[in-house]
Length: 105
Image 1 (cartoon, rainbow, N blue to C red):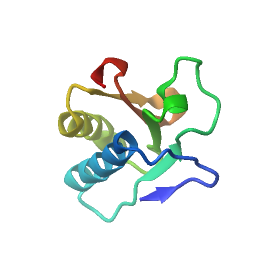
Image 2 (cartoon, one colour):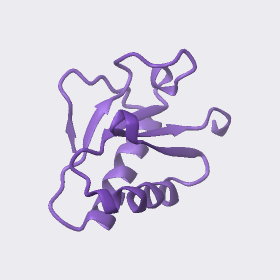
Image 3 (cartoon, rainbow, N blue to C red):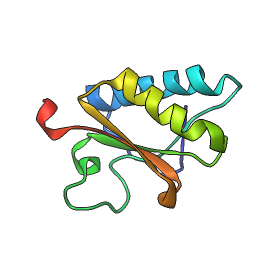
Image 4 (spheres, rainbow, N blue to C red):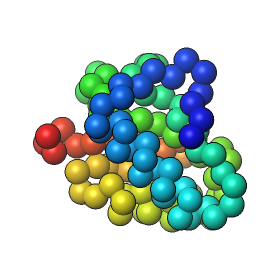
């Protein structure tokens, strides 16, 4: 796993789970040497309600993910993380957003 310069992550159990499951999803779907990149954690500008500010959300680059694998990767990550998490493919922002739901604590 690589991290974009200046990314700030809260290393709580939620972020650790997201990082671990995202890496596993990438290995399961992409099947080639690929190193996922976390592009945002606590840092950056997000909506006021964003889980980023509470250590519940992380973003990952999709630039190096082959186009035909983007949706399968999203679904694999969602399956691994389960219903307590939301995995979004934000193509306009060129990243995946993974967030633990507020009501899952």
